[in-house]
Image (cartoon, rainbow, N blue to C red; front, top):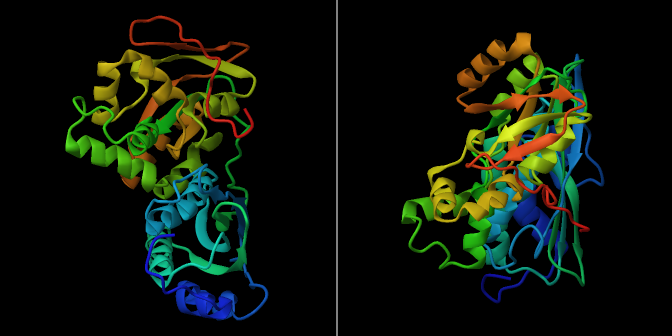
Length: 333
């Protein structure tokens, strides 16, 4: 682990020095001095729960800055909250460490958590710390609130719904490629474009501001974590649609990479880690959804219209059908 040799040898010291301050402002957390947290939902709301761990060597590099993967651990869960139309309010943290961390490392890690929870509007409520013979593992279970009856499911899209996606797609996959091979695309990307792509990989930005528009106008939604095509198929259910690669919103960095090598289309369509939101919106709610997104300051792009019984077809920039054997990331493939 990064940091000096001043290692923390007492679990209580670790929790009370670096994690308990993150619970300040959450009465039910009891300063992380109890064995459980107390959650009192607001009248007329439901509690949405999502759990997404991240593991060194799978979701991040152990050599990355601790503040970055601490941010990511919260961001991937806050993204699920946003897609359900929920507002995050708290999270449980399970931190499994392969060795006693240094104080510098814990300071960086807790700073990343603080930056993320201040950005997403939530507090640490509790959790546990453990030693593990395996890689560093950060488990987060996040909770959010949603007005009664306004939860946005994943599998309720209907034929005729318009499919929208937020932001741009493929940036994180490009950032991962740059993280693996720093010299990649040296003659293709500017320093600004490289920094943008790396930033999108290291610190995803969940679209929390879109929650209200989703609650009010979407029939179904999910976040793009495993790849645009894989998550689009999940959203579509028994329906399909025709998707043009040129209609997928991309950043200038991804556009430059595609211009350099059109075979990188899979980077855009199946790369994963975007943490943008896919939403199915009924035709009569499209105008309201777009207005709500604009008011939230979140760009949305229409990808197509779902059609029952139709396949999911994708054409490249030259109008040729793309091979869809690999739709996205799979932990067990």
